[in-house]
Length: 144
Image 1 (cartoon, rainbow, N blue to C red):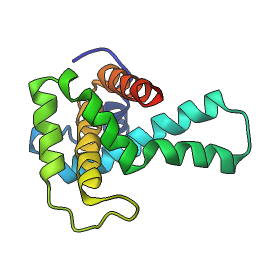
Image 2 (cartoon, rainbow, N blue to C red):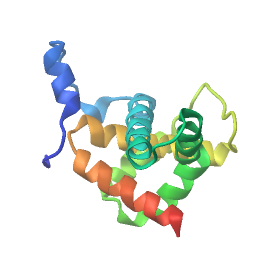
Image 3 (tube, rainbow, N blue to C red):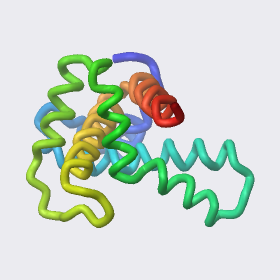
């Protein structure tokens, strides 16, 4: 494992919870935690770089966490992923969700779910450095 903020392990230890085998986690579970950690990263970034009204912070964050943006990010990042990362992304993308996309087409929604599953896996395995690297590269690609 690489060095990084191992917040997940900290939570497990603090609440005396067992370590989980991430490989056996359902892809939608990985996407669930990945969605949360990705949004936390984006909100942290937006708050640190924009001293403005909360509604403007929310608008900026919402633009970066929506399914369409995540789908574009993973399309640009795909060639940079390891085989393991690609496998997790595909598991998430192909998972059968019982919820429908609210403001995205189904392809973008599924790609975004795969992206979130990848973020969840990286977070849960303590690879936060790699997670941040991919998020930064993905956001840089969006600006171009």
